Length: 239
Image (cartoon, rainbow, N blue to C red; front, side):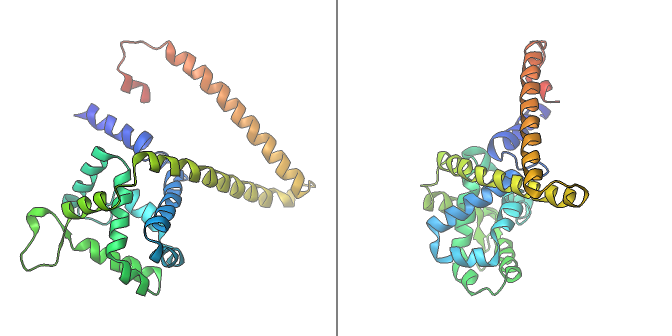
């Protein structure tokens, strides 16, 4: 029903893929760093090559952001979605690692990012449901691929993913702040007599004031929320 669909959407946006669907896709950038560390740990032979090809941002923004719906047919991708809801976000990392492992030699021989992504898309095109397998085909069965991924990378737990996310989130947020500061300095430098260091100091002061104000407003909002009608369904509070 509608309410069940709503709570699934809340689970995706707030718990399973946090901060993925905002203007700066912070969550996807964080998981890009997580995936990088996992490839380095589990597939060190191709880590350097993947970094050179610049594929990690495509994995996080294409595979993860859409739960593989952008590269798999819907009737096949639902297997991934079922596993995602059952086991959590660790499944998409395990599956991504397994796909890269299956295409290890191909990736090592690739000359550029375009060739790599075309080859991987061709591989995804060979993945089928259990009931679509032909005895003469070389298709990959999706249930076998997921099962193999979960078994091969069982050391990747939800707790491990959350720990990695916390580590990389700090770096991503700091990088976004640094970029924002550089853009501000560049845009106002020509219209003010302030030095670059003075502009940076002013930026920090204004940013801190915004955070303090936002914190005060959130406290007031919680007080207001506490006074809401207790008989009103909780999901109405998200509107």
